[in-house]
Structure formats: C-alpha cells, structure tokens
Length: 273
Picture (spheres, rainbow, N blue to C red):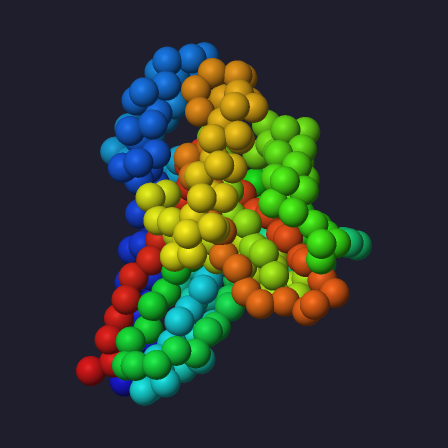
C-alpha cells in the first residue's frame, strides 16, 4: 500500500524544488542568452535557489497527471493527497495564492492555492507515476483549441499554430515549451496538449511523421524571433512536443498549450511494495 503521508512528503519536496530551482536545460539556455535582462534572469535563478524563494511571483495553479498501476493500493484517494501537499507547501512557503473559488462572479481567493487540477490514468503494474505542472496565468491564457477540417493538411496545422504563437506568444514569457494535442475529441485534444508539456525537451514522438512535425514546428517557431520575454533576442521555444490519439472521421481537433521560460514541472515514480 502507498501510504498517504509518504506520498504527500515526496510531492511537497518536488513542489518546492520546481518552484525554486530552475532545471538544468532552462539554466543552460539562460546562460547562452546575451540580450536584455540576461544578467538579471541568471541572478534571479541564483537567488531563488539560494534563498528558497519562488522563481516567479506567479506560483501558478498546480495540475497533476497520475498514472496508477492496476495493482496499486492507496491509503486515501489521490486528489486528497495531492491537495494536502499543495496546501501545506503554499501556506508554509512564501508563494502567492493564485486560485479563486468562483471563476466569474466574486472571484474570492481560496487562500491556500487549492483546489488542484487532477487527471488520473489507469495503467498496468504496481507503480504510481506522478507528473505535475505549475501553470502560471500568462502561459495558460495562450491555450487554444482549433477544430480543423478533417481534410486539413500539416501545412494548415502549422499555419494556425504559428499564427497563434506569433500574435500572442510574447504574452506567455518565452522561450516557450509548446505542447500540441492532435485527435480524440475537443477536450481530449486539450488534455493531450497539457500532457505533452510533461515531456522532456529532448523527447520526440514515437511516430516518425509526428517527430518530424515537432522538429519542423520548433524551427519555424524560433524563426518568429520572439526571443526571451518577447524582446526579439535568443530562442523563442525550447521544444515542441506532440501527443496524438485516434479521432472521428469527421473531425480533426488540434489543441495548443505552452509553458513559460521557467518550465516549472516535476515527476516521480513510487512503487506499491
């Protein structure tokens, strides 16, 4: 059985790490960047790690993706454990509470950065794999869903993706990690685009055609020259990752999600022993 307190402690540690320590690839790209605010960006990363302060004032809404083996036994429902971890971390650390209880009317802050967003996938085995994204508002607002014609080509897909990033990408604090979901239904495509953001920059789709499309889109997004913070210097995107799924003969959903230049995420695997 996976004990809730043990799982909670692992999540808390990973959340603090993701909020305060820039990952190696993000830091290396920042070290290459020589444009406006380059020294400030590196200094910010150094201070955040040393002082355990958040890398960004927008400490986001936390979104979990849990892959649970069919032999795994849990002491309590996963969303409860995840939510407890987020509440404990955001109350104990100097992180901004970014969640409001009602999206349209009073918009009262919940005061502990909960509730979370949680997606659960059943898989084979006795392991629980947990991935999470710390989604800031700027990057989340770039999310989009496009219902293309089923006869649309890769050129059509590229055109809508590039036009969207060209017109709004600077608002999401580039360089971006671009996640694209293709297929399924409308909501499945959006979920796939978020799942794509949990992939590593170097990971490529297992299907050759999608892998090539990832590389082509990355090259063309970088040719837009958004640059760091949208100021035209440095790369525009770290990586493009695509997740795909079968779809209805009359549809072609395409969804786009992005992460900001800090790319705050985490993952770990725990075994039910």
